[in-house]
Image 1 (cartoon, rainbow, N blue to C red):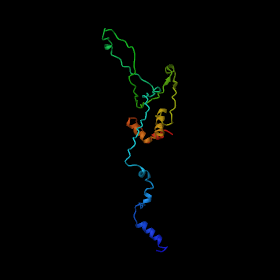
Image 2 (cartoon, rainbow, N blue to C red):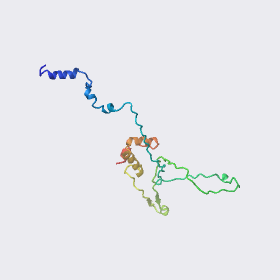
Image 3 (spheres, one colour):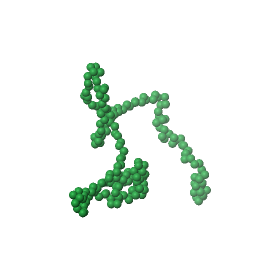
Image 4 (cartoon, helix red, strand yellow):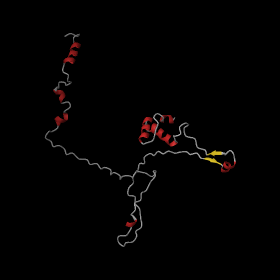
Length: 195
C-alpha cells in the first residue's frame, strides 16, 4: 500500500466497517477501572445500612383568609318565638350570645341599570294667569361623559376599558357578553364609545 492509498482505506473502513463504537478490550486495560471489585472479598458480609430518619417540621394550622377589607353581611339565625321556651320550667328564653359558625365569600354578579337624567321645567303660576308670556326655567343637567354618546357613564367606560386593557378582552367579545346578559349593545359601536 502506498502513501496515496492510505486515506482511501481509512474512509472505506469508516464507511463500510462496523458501525458500533465498541473497541477491542485489552486485558491490561480491563483492570484499570475494576480495582475495587477485584480487591474486595466476595464472601465478606455486607455492612448494615444505617437508616436516617428526618424530623419534619409540623405544619402550622390553617390561617383564615383576611376579609376585613370586604363589606360584611351577617345573617343571624334565631329560634322562632314559639320555640324560645325553657324545656325545664316553661319560662321565656332570651338571647345570651352569638357565635360565627362559618364565613362564606358570596359573589354578586355585575348589575346594569339605566339611570335617566330628568330635567325639570319651571314656570310662574302668577304669570300664567295674568301675563301674555310665561317665563320658563329648566334645571341644569350635567353633561354626558362623551359628546354624542348619551348612554356611556363613567362606570360603564371604566368597565369596558378594564376588560379591554387589563383583562385583554376584545370589544366584540364584550359586546357578546352584554347581549348574553340582556344588555343591548350595538355591533361595532362599542369601540366608538371610548378613546
